[in-house]
Image 1 (cartoon, rainbow, N blue to C red):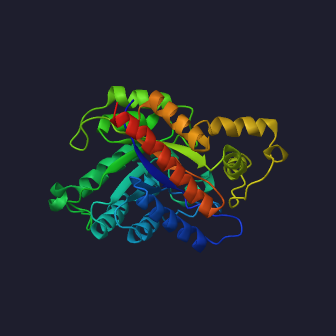
Image 2: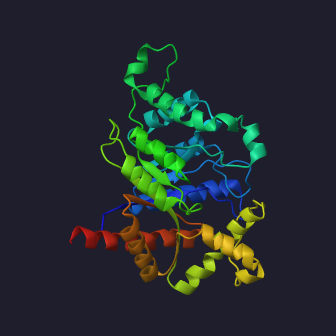
Image 3: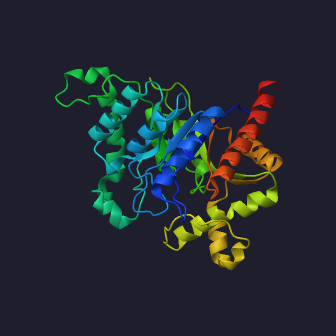
Length: 338
């Protein structure tokens, strides 16, 4: 079994009864906790027009988190590139890298991170996305290069900086692109598990080494809810289930506290839909999540596991990440000594 890193994905979840200011303070608290636990990186994801997620101004929030931490890598998981000018993103992340040298990641995706009407308000043209997204990645690489110093349009800050670019995907489309460009690839298994296995196969088989990366590098994002007992873990996981029910119902209200019985909330069809989307969700106590992490890694052999944890109680969320760190460290120790 291949050794792996472990990281955090944070969507800056807004909870019922809490303010967005509270949300940002909780994200910073989690980032500090993750840093102390030796997680590799802490990523924030761009979403828009959702009462439940406060990470719309992703680069601003990355700056806040990086400023409040010392060593952990901080980045985007991701910036939805067709929502933006390539130059603006190059300048924003050039500024972040200049402020926090060696600590900033730029993960980019092509999805809108929102509904169709809001995507229009962001200025997206869906007819050209598949052409626009690869072109924008090449533009970013050019803006970050030293060779662009003679160009008429330059990214300052940004030019000449080593800012790692990761391609994000929730289908097989971006796997082909990441392989062609020789860039690391992160898959959104926490909400779109259906094509993950095929996407990894495509990426590995078609990967072309580049000056950025000599061999494939895969990050798999999954959901994780761990607690002292499996009973408690399943109880607090109902916040995650309710969040996905709200997506199914197009009701993006803030995250709800746990409930005793999900069957009072979802219909059998909704339950089936949600559990399908949450196929790669690891729920349980230490022993259970350790076994699930081990099984996942034996099957997929990823380079990095990124844990997304929707838990209403902040202290229980911190404890969940502790348990995942302990479980991952145990597996890593066995791998290192085998």
